[in-house]
View 1 (spheres, rainbow, N blue to C red):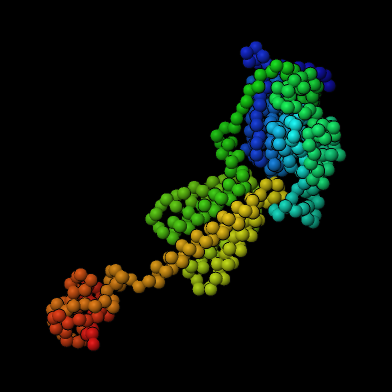
View 2: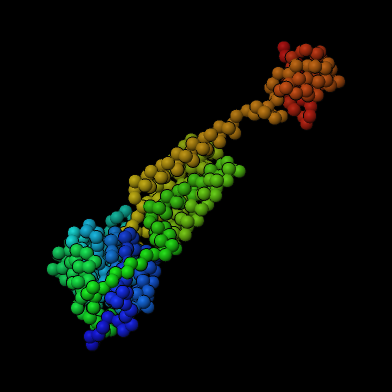
Length: 421
């Protein structure tokens, strides 16, 4: 493979070469993968010398990490992954991205590793499935490191044993090539180094290069935000609560509209996050049982069962065998408990109102005292004054004006009364 310039179509900014910089601060998801893919194409078409990815991630979707690894290997220009700033980490999926870069660098005080697949509860994936998932991830890490000439044994240990190391140890172990304090320091140390781009080597010419930062589009930013399991879970809870409130009190509109929007956003994020059908169905079952508790005399069985189903469904909602991201347990307990309490409280008031004796309308007349205004005979109706109104009345008793009677029934525009003993 022959050495050559970083690009044959370099364009200059103020007479100087330039590099494109993007920052990934959060989970690895389809939005991030699409952003990196777009940035590679943008830097190449614009004549940039290299693309720098400043990375700080706790991990994310394995499928998105695989896609990014393929994009980095196929990139037509050098891609530098820089784990920064101080305190940042390239954990789990971030490990694969870092070792797939043309040039890997870290800032002082950063770390990399801990790429072992886990379950929803944070434990190991058991059985044959666990073995397959672990072997696949380990071989992906080893092959990626081998392709880039990095430490294969450490890459495999990062998956199988969840090994995590700091910047100095990573440099000594040949996991990364540079420890730089800043972007200018990174460019200075990278200048003149030979890296692989596609099937050939190029020599980086980054001295005094201008750094041009690129940000996500609005659509990518929204999708990136919806890839946070905690936000998705809260949107789902808010959507269910809003729709329930609208059904319990038709005509309010605002809770129904807001709930529908939240629910649609949550459903849109299901295309980004690996959501388990079991967890989602358990959550819906739990909400259904909580609502049923207000209409069925189950003596608390439906309510307790609903809370349990909602909690278990919440814990199983995100399939963490495909990502190390999950909903925080504190959010699950708080949101699920609050939703359960609100549904039961609203249901209690609704049931109480339904059980009350009507005090208005025709139903409210039954049992009320009426004053006779016109004589009433068993075969001749008269008139009574009740609820501030004059009503035509019949009775089996003879009643004279001024007498008191009690309304026993209402038939159309006529009431039936009886003498008060």
